[in-house]
Image (cartoon, rainbow, N blue to C red; front, side, top):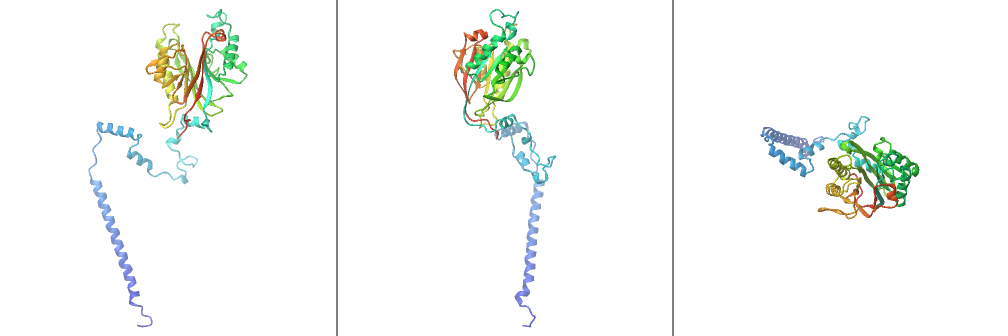
Length: 381
């Protein structure tokens, strides 16, 4: 072997490298051809016929059973998420928000307001009282001779509320004169909604609460048919129990009596709206949680009709007992009611206070009950 002659094995290495490279190229070519054949076969495969109405019904049923999201829709959701590092579509360069994130639900706002929600039970006393409006007992009023004027009667009303440790009270016939007297006498220790915020008529049905025990989170009104079907705004508010952080909705209503003609039709319409509102407010966001406890109270001007409809239609219980199915009235009842949602609400110690100071203050009894809020606290998933 010459000095500069390469060994035979070394001379063969480049040849072997070329052979390996050619084999790899041939394998890649065969894979590409097979893939093209599969794609061509799929493209020429006949498509499925359009769904018939029967097929659509089946698809709808499937959607319901799976939460309303089909397999195709799930795939669409996964298709190329936006790059958060490039702004994701937000005007300020921040990641774009999804539709779900943009929709701020009531429960989310509630949860934000109730930050630090405690698991402890909340215990308080809830009342409903038709306080006999100022206009009835002023000079010339239809009840001016039997009852004192509203200034004295408001003082007695406040004495009854404080003396019985009431924390929240639904007040009916609470006219502007009585509202101003009440607020002056309580000196800011109590609040009321709507009070005079909406004028002289809405104040007549206000919810009052002890501000050291409850904090206002939200306040709204709903139009309820009153005499001759005229709509009157009546309040519903969301309160936060300060000590425990627990939340509850309170609705206060006054349905029309038949003193200006038969008002049964309007009472029926009013009760239907109140049941619908109660159902809406207590509905949970998801099956694995309880809704926010909801209370409906006031002067219904009905006994069995109101009790049977509300307890059955709103999944509610009366503070003074009774059964919804079959409908059986509690023994201690009248036309004034306090209802609460189930579960999550426990009533005890119901009192229908009549006679004595109550009869001097009003032509209605004052009713109240101890309330315990229990169960799972509302939350946002």
